[in-house]
Amino acid sequence: MSTPRPRPSRVLAAVALGLVAWTPLYAAAVRWMLRRNIRALGRGDMGPLLSSYAEDVHFVFPGENSWKADLHGKDEVARWVERFVRVGLRLEPEEILVTGPPWNTRMALRFTDHLTLPDGTVVYENQGAMLGTIAWGRLTAYEVHEDTEKSAALDAWLAEHEPSP
View 1 (cartoon, rainbow, N blue to C red):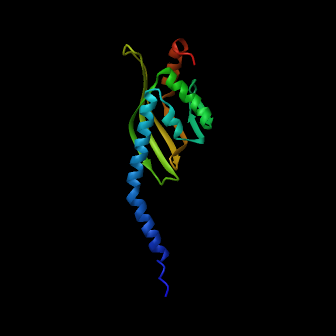
View 2 (cartoon, rainbow, N blue to C red):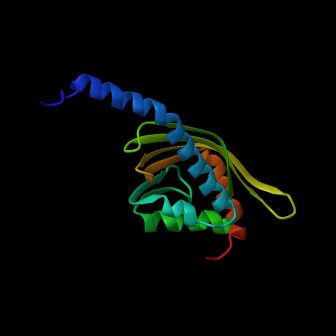
View 3 (tube, rainbow, N blue to C red):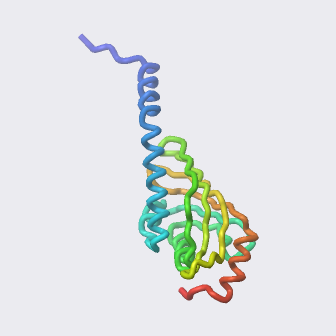
């Protein structure tokens, strides 16, 4: 005597219910990972951020300034991030939105970034948004949008003050 097989509609309903149940936990884990990576970056530790990149990550920073980028691959993006850290920029997340399943996760991050000198002088402050795609825990693509005029003004200050690589 054979055991009756569950109807496909019931299987799909069970899978869907399971997805609904773990989706908030998954989104919370992604938000935690992003915050952890940003905190580490603020300490000058690029390791957690770079380890979250897919090998073929695609990064875009539009504008007409020295930060402008359309980069492909972890090594290219790492050089851009190295400059971000070397200059002393800090990113402060304000809101992180996460949606989608692990194989096609979308994230949006609203942030403030700034450069503050040791004496407390704020050289640069900007607000922006980052939009990205994550697949199985790896950042596959992201783009940053912020006031590019402020980025150009930072370039003018950096022309005289940027630390050497």
